[in-house]
Length: 191
Image (cartoon, rainbow, N blue to C red; front, side, top):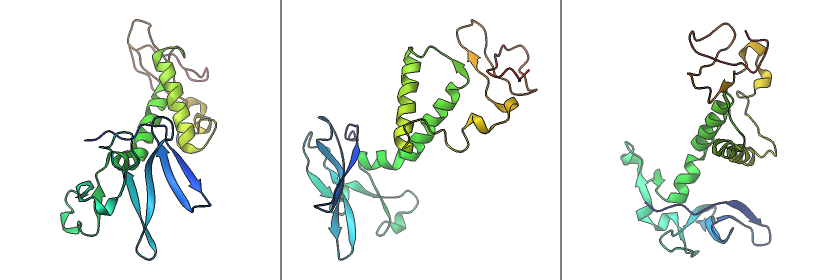
């Protein structure tokens, strides 16, 4: 499988030419990842960059590349009107919601840990938070509706695990405790 176009990516809107392009690559924004072309009287089709041509903006309409089109597994009988685009950039775009959920899960798990912000994990978490802010359109981290600790009652706020204590770690909420495990809560009202 081909590797996707390197990031960062951004959308570029050109009102004069009535075009929208997703651009990325190295040097920054030098390559077109995806754009759109007229298809018929009132439709459009995506055009994707040929990834075999390193560093080149050779664009192909998805409908003109049968090697990029494949039927959905178990739905082969619908392949003539509903098929998958098997292109590295298209796969990355399609996986974006799952990737966001995964990095949010990592960020949520970090709420239960105590770590040095200058450690590799701390630096990676800062990058995760910056990426989430970019995706959600906020300058600050947007935890999402179900992820904000501020809306939880005090006894349900996450506990913080102290790493590097040399013994097993656990967490507790309210009256639920793991016997024999050591936990340190970030909320004094939890006992």
